Image (cartoon, rainbow, N blue to C red; front, top):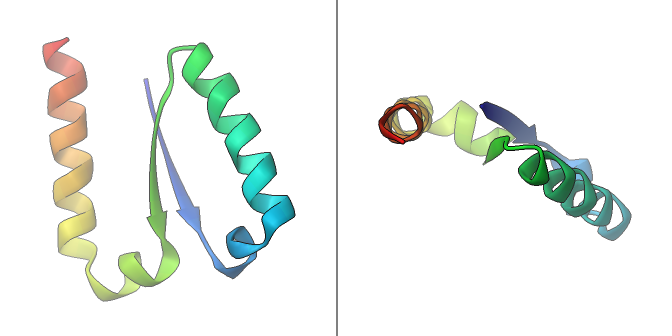
Length: 63
């Protein structure tokens, strides 16, 4: 299973980063792979973001 997270400015705060790490570990332990993208990356380079997502889906389907 795949989850996609878009991280905005608040994710730069230490408290939010800590919560993200805890959440990511729980999700990984449940078999969920997380792809993270910065909001700016999505806005500035959506083609690359889509390419990364497509490759990850292909990788997951092969396994």
